Length: 269
Image 1: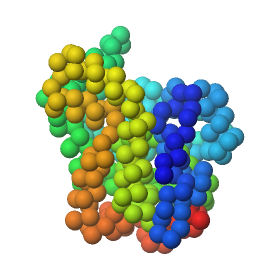
Image 2: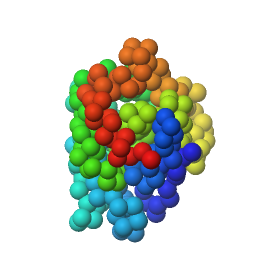
Image 3: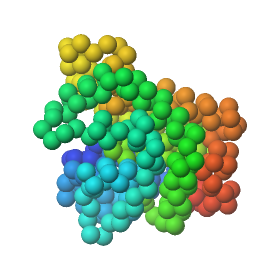
Image 4: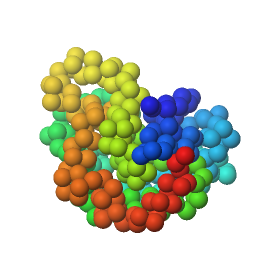
């Protein structure tokens, strides 16, 4: 099902075309997701623009992250920042000193440090529960929908840092709005694990050598990649509370049925 796209220096990129949505399918080469574009080559950007027709980039990272690693873009591309994590969440589970390594610090050792830190074991649950509970996140994902609606069916790419958590939840919501079932939605989410498999295997081996426990290795897995169960838990919680992802989108994200119908006309075939 996954439509993985290979670029020179854009990780975890794929398009959502072909995913079943009711009795229709998502149109090919219209909806794209990826990691950030800070290291994208000129060839990568030309492909995004000329091969796929992408002119709008939705960046779900915080202002701080965008300043640290700004996207590379061509002049014809528009980048819109819609940060979905508020400062309270950053201060709680994503303190800037904890997630941004100092200059000269080995990045792998930096991640091992987070895995060993007591806050590490709380990160996954806090983040995915935040997606379900946070009014701020709900408003921001509502803006995400409005921005895509305003494109009138044109191709769009969205991303966060690694294209797996914030970007992944955006894809969950959007695919649900289009009418995809939960299993297909979770299959797309889980594809990020394949995208980071080589990197994860190398870090896991090094982590074991350095004495990380199984619990700490699971934190490392969360930092680098995904497991299907990470998103299964919030989806289950949403279904139990709201009856379905679609009800959640209408009641908490603020997307109307008319807007959903319009998105389906734009992006389904």
